[in-house]
Structures are given as structure tokens and as C-alpha cells.
Image 1 (cartoon, rainbow, N blue to C red):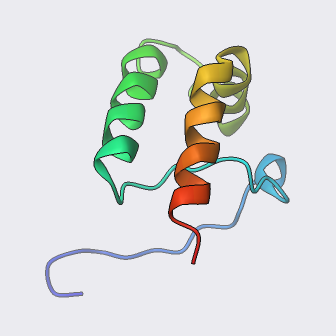
Image 2 (image 1 turned 180 degrees about the horizontal axis):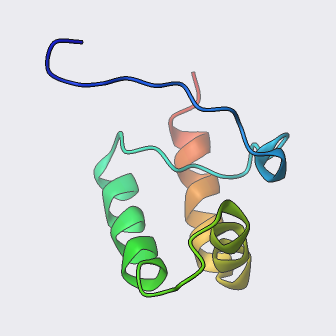
Length: 75
């Protein structure tokens, strides 16, 4: 708390019930995938959650890798 501001944000409706997506940075695989997503996404003018979901859905490999990471890191 002294070094970082922490805020909880409400979950956008588009993400409710979407347990097939992983936008966390816990592993090197997460980092690599997020780098790729950022490289594509940062150039877009629409940076909404909806646009991010469209990007992931238009690249089945992204979602497949997310699902692998979810299965691997399940607690």
C-alpha cells in the first residue's frame, strides 16, 4: 500500500462467466502471451473490453494457450 495504489474494479458484464480467459501475469507463458496481445491491441483505437474479447476470439491460439495455462495453474 505504501508503494502501489490498489483498486478493485467491477467486472465488465462481457467477462462474467468467462472462465476460459486468463489475463494474469503469473508465469513466463502468461508474459509471452500478454506481450503478443499487447503488440496487436495497443495499436487499435478501440481498447475496450469488448474489443479485447474480439481480438482473443479472432485468434483461437490465444484462447487455447489461455486454457492450457488455466489447466496448468488450477488450484
